[in-house]
Each structure stands twice: as structure tokens, then as C-alpha cells.
Image (cartoon, rainbow over all chains, first blue to last red; front, side, top):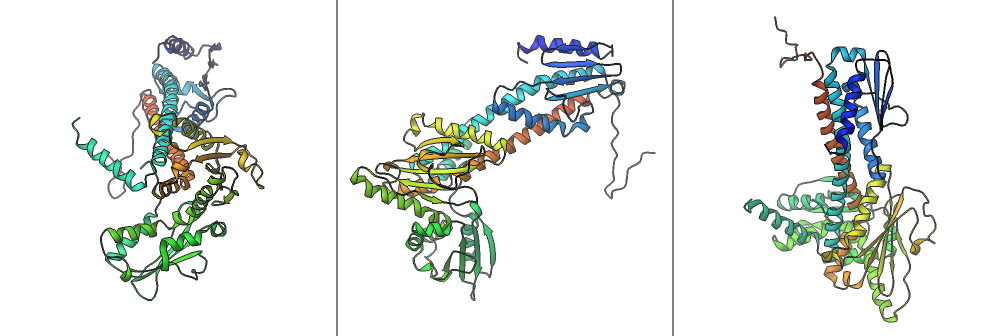
Length: 164
Length: 305
């Protein structure tokens, strides 16, 4: 967890814990809104999307999750307007599950989702770079595929037998 | 496998197989860009007929595909191709070169049939550039090869270069954005010292490059992109280098889309993993352990009494 995020997540955690006692007042924290009523609490999250790639990755990821909503019990199939993903914790959930563990889950989710998206973005860029470089290297050398594959085999066998 | 190979794997393996053990066969298979092949034996087990259908055959013939194929395959080329196909090669296994390096080369050259057909306009452009070089000005005609339903390659020779332009469609929003990331890397990669002499790559989204702006029938929508390769004489003056350049350039579109798909598959498997991790965290919140139904080998439910 990054240090910047730590106090924010601590605040969310205490707010959620307080809200899960099902007191009847709404609260608003930064990009994450949670509004408890008498018997349920809704947590909606807006995920950081700095550019087009992050936007599409975030969309793919949340959609992937929401398609599996039934196995996540507290997750909703559709987010509240203006947010990317919504959780709804009802009184039946709090009766059948441990409250602090539900809070753990939400916090873990918030922690991981940002990291996952930025890692996916990094891996996309890394792949794109490798792909472009291998192609242009092959074209600039003007070598046929046979030489390239042979070269790869040599490199591979070298790395396989080289001392670690 | 990062780079795509220009030869057809099925032709290669089937021929190797049939050389060692001739049997009757009749197979149809495909290659990139909707190219269809038909490989069959005629009256004897040792005589194979390989036919190819390629979407842009008429255009390729106009740019000299017949000559290139005749040069590569000589008397193997049939004057009358099989019906429904554009070109047929008759391969007599008994008259083929002897086993060893020669035969491998023979099989490999046959497996390169699609590549050789598509190489014709490139070779023509390289030749044209040679002619124009002395006049030190002027441009050749734009050769358009509509090798897929909505996508085309445009090739134009000038006195000092050959320009190759690919138009490509990104069907999905994700493809378009991923494609942009990849193509940006193609543009940026040339800054590396070891590939500074690679062809220059330019990329535009939606707006066609100046060279082909006057070509009729260009699509005007957000999902189309144009990639331009500028080839200079060092990329094609030596015949060996030119052959490598042609093999790689004509597979560019497939290479790009192949890696876009790979990235998407990778993201999918990553998300699957992450979601199962989330599931584990949430399961810890459940107070009672979910009892799973246990089955015996025969499918009956196991009951504990």
C-alpha cells in the first residue's frame, strides 16, 4: 500500500466500520461514497482513470467483476451513476458474515484495484515495446525468419544452460 | 514466438510427411487474410496438387504475380488452375530434389506460396524506384492491394524511397486503444541506436496520409488507422535483404493484431486471477463453512450417516 493512500484507506475503514453498525446517517468520503439506511449500506467507488488506457482497463476489470456478482454476494451488478462499482451490504449479509471481514474485503479491493490497473498498463506498454523492437530489428537487419529463430534458439539454449 | 513466420506451417509439415510416406489426401486449409488452400493427390499418391485462392488475385496479377510465381516455381505452375482457386502447383514427389538440404529448400519455397504472390507489388515497386533513381525526381503509381474486406496495402515508389501504407480496422474500442499503444511504440522504437536504420514508421488515426488522400473509397471513421513504412534503398537494394523486408512488411498487419489479441488474453487471465483472490478474501468473511456436495465416482451423492 502506498503511503499516500494509507490515511485515506484508514478513514474509509473507520467510516465503514461505524456505518456497519447501521446508524441512520449518510457520510461522504472523497471519491468513495457510502450511504447507510436502516438496514443496508451502499459503498460506491470511483476508480482513478488518468488516460484512455486506464479508462478501458478499468472498464474491463469492473465489468469482469460485476459479471461475477452473484459469487461476490455484496457486489451489485450495476454501479450507481457516476461511479465505477457499487457494493450493497444488507442486514442479512451482516448477520451471516463477519462485519470486520467485509470491511477488510472492501479495503483490500480499493487497495488492489489501482495497483492491478497500473500493473496491467505497465505490462501492456512493456509488451508493445518488445513487439515493436523485435519487428523493427528484424526488418532493419533484413534477416529472414530462419536466422531469427535460430538466433532465438541459441539465446535460449545459452540461457537454459548458463549458471544462474 | 514473437515474430510471425512467413511460410505456411500446414503445407510445410504435410509435404515433409508425404515425402517420407506418400498417401492419398485431400485437405483444405486457410492462412491469414482469408487465403484458402487445397492440397490433394490426383490419380497417383505421389502427385500432389496445391491450389491457392487469394482475395486480391486480380490486383496481384496486374502487378506481376504470375511472373514472380513462375520464377519461383517454374514448370510446377499449372496453366489452368483448379476451379474456385487462382493458382495451382503440381508437385511430383518422385521428381523433387533429393533428400537433404535441397529438398528442405524446395519444401520451404512451396510453403512460401502466399508470401511470393503478395511479394509481386513490392518487387515491382523496388524495380520502379531503381528506374526513377537516375532521374532523381518523380513518383510511381500507387498500387492498392485490397487483401482483406475492408483493409488494404498501398505501395508507391519514388526516386529515393518506397512508401508502404497499411490501412487497418480496429473492430473494438479496446483494440483501437491497444493498437494505439503498440503503434506509438513502433514510432518511438527507432530512437534506439541498434534499430536506427529500420524503416521509418508513421501512424495516423482516421486521417489518411497525404500520399493516398486522393484515393477514392477510403473509409472515414474513428476505427480506422493508417500505418506508413518508408523504405529506403538499403532496405531493398540487396536481393537477400529485400526478400526479408518483403516477408516482414507484408505480415505487419497480422503481427500487430496478433499481439493485440495476445495482450487481451493476458489481461483476461490476469483479471481471472485477481478476481479469485478477491473471492478468497470475501470468503474469509463468511461465518459458516459452505458445505459442498460430495460425489462418488459413479455420480451418486456421498452421504455420511
